[in-house]
Image (tube, helix red, strand yellow):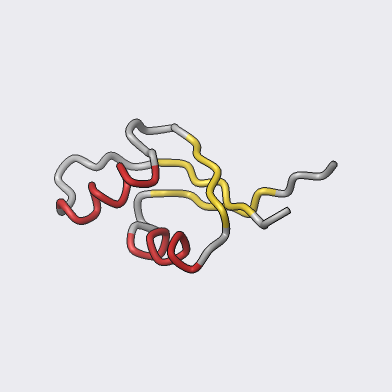
Length: 64
């Protein structure tokens, strides 16, 4: 099983550059408080790094 990252939108995208808005929409974050679980890949890490001031990211540990 691949490692995953849980991402939560904590600040509004109002007034942010269009590039940041596109990244948020691509990740599936449309409303404050919404959570998504993404695979821990270099492309997702890059997107998280660009908008780290708008989100809260944490490692998702799924124990079976």
